[in-house]
Length: 115
Length: 115
Image (cartoon, rainbow over all chains, first blue to last red; front, side, top):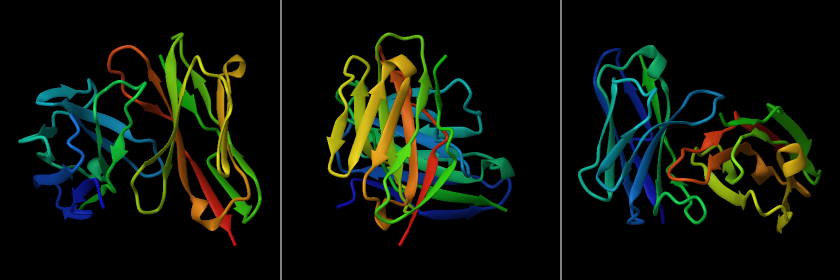
């Protein structure tokens, strides 16, 4: 059974048109992450939620926002997508943030196309 | 600053061949964690292994083995008797041990195993 679910798997939007990507998890994990992965590149962490505490990476553009209404769901909002935002967006979860014991579990990703 | 280098962009092998994926890292920390993730065509990153910097023992899991050498700052991954299902992009990653620190990924190695 899928533990980290991302919807939709493929999203097409127009330049400048707001878009929301969804992630849900059945693991009851405290931490949820959003990564951006451009073609042939490493995943890049955008931000993460530790419970309700939002943690933004310093180099994440303001165009990217996130919401976590409850433990199970987390959303990525792109307010005005540009062509450079076309990428795979990966959601991940972990029980906590202790790398000695915690593992990040990833969803299958949403591939975003910007026309 | 932390950095992970995966110099091999793409490797092609024929089924049943052994293959080694190289990972070289840079860090000034004395304690840290190293990881390998597999990203099959379906998109999700799958956790393979975590290694603490104090534990230099090599590890074997089925056809997979990992060679950690602090002296050369390397954490190489070997697949023995490769199979078509091993075709994927493999990422090496590094994290600090203290507090929350994001995973720093290498750029990945694409492994193609042909029948």
